[in-house]
Amino acid sequence: MEPKQLPQDRDIVTAALIVIGDEILSGRTLDKNIGFIARYLTAIGIRLREVRVVGDIENEIITAINALRGSHDYVFTTGGIGPTHDDITADCVAKAFGVPIDIDARAVALMRERYDEKDMTQSRLRMARIPRGAELIENSVSKAPGFMIENVIVMAGVPKIMQVMLDNVAPRLKTGRKLHTRTVRVERPESEMAPGLAELQQQFLDVQMGSYPYFEKGRLGTNLVLRASDEGLLDAALKALWEMLKAQGVADRAQSVE
Image 1 (spheres, rainbow, N blue to C red):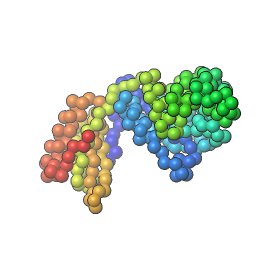
Image 2: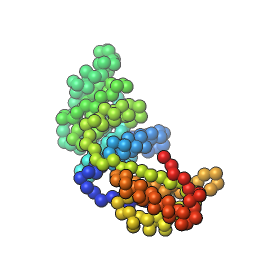
Image 3: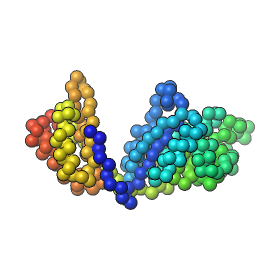
Image 4: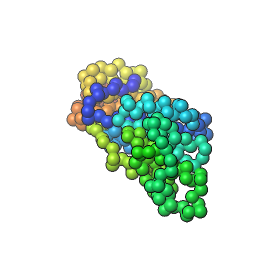
């Protein structure tokens, strides 16, 4: 059972993520950024509503950027801003916004903190190409910056570098009401939990409720997850959930999970 969507309001800030790279789609590289970004944004009051994975194909990247930047407060991208010929994300962002792109003196200055003049090769200078009008996102790991243009935030795909970029850009972002979570783990199949949870949802329309099955030690179980921005309402829903589990005679097979 998937959680229902809460009504839109001005206190909710939304984001989408575009993961860019043929290596992700081919399975050669396992993505380690989606979960990190989702948890990070949730913690600061931004709700990640959509994730797309696209290959190193110009038209597809541009289409994804333009489709998402008008329907979300922020669009984050990871991957494709390195030194090789197939790192085309920056060019695609520039084309999506209809602005020129060139080597940026600010980016070069940052990179010279790490590289000597003789090491500033044409390949490395590719990482200093920034769309006109973009703000830089500093990168303390390798110095090659990411950038932010309007509501699109372009970051590296290497997890360690992406994380420092995210830390750098986060203070510039508007945030909304934080979404709090309560989870109850029940050692019973999801099908048994679904009817009661559906009834409970009707009592608490402003609480997202979801059930997520797991299989462990040869047994089926279900994680019941409640989410809301109002902690008082969330705790009331949690209390009602426990009453439901007691009524079903399965409370002794359940435990709250942090």
